[in-house]
Length: 436
Image (tube, rainbow, N blue to C red):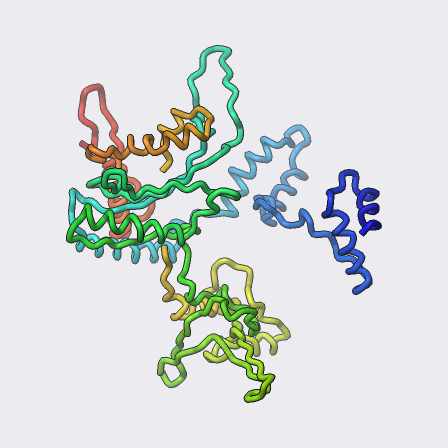
């Protein structure tokens, strides 16, 4: 202990009280056991993704630097080249990709089908959104007097997240002081981070009871979007990410249990597949040992008569557990993970499920002020005792896009169609607009 503390003070200019000495002792133990010290990993993991991490972008930037005259070789010119030449060739907008168009068509068709069964309140429905407000979030563009240069805090500072359910007939769903609006102080040493559990609690405790009181005789249908926060599955859901390549021993009987799956056997019959194996040693004796194993990708796929291990082995290759691509190839044979992920029982899993300018204009760089006034700012957009005009506009705007996509309009066609309702071009003063 003493030797490691002396060594830490000698090796580091600013040693910590305990960590450096503890690290030295760890290095010593590793050397005694293995005869070497592993490479230091601190700082090796990229915290932010950079465009230059992409090999194509990196190589293009390198070639530009080599081929460009020295006088023109500067950061602004490189940025212009990347933005206008390289990035458009590497990345593309997947909005009109075949699979995206197909999914959008199915989704829009289902939404239109649901709409036929919805009670109409001037085309009303219930919508939900969430947003985060920062106490230092002031307007980006300002009108300034000559020589006026306000000092603004560059940090966003403290934040408050808002999760709220609205309907165009009532705006924010509320009964007196009971609202569907929830404030959440996200972050470490605060409320943590908003997850599907918080969403579930909000819907159960506030949204459904409020909906039933405000819309007697109606039934609510919740369709939640696909943001990363909402992609939360039931604890027993079947997900390919839950399985390793090989069978894995369960370290605790309290580990999450995955429900059985199914597949269609060679005889055309539906087969139930359990994802666990029980190994019993010394059965019936006093020292009997029972060990549970969760099946791995290899076992699950082999039992289903699937897998490409033998084919890859015959070619002198190895079928990796994950191919590294976000999307699977057309027949899902790129890797075991994607093959299992695209099996019918795994695809059938069900998922649980605004930026306010007023808050920016009233910014005084105080978290206390934001906390005291945010509820009132939100009520200005959805007044308690007035028709929620803004909410109705947002709602109608969304439905126009849904109907446009249901008619198989592409992005540009849908935008032009919706634009007729959302923008006006005046030919001269005091005349109706072109779309009126």
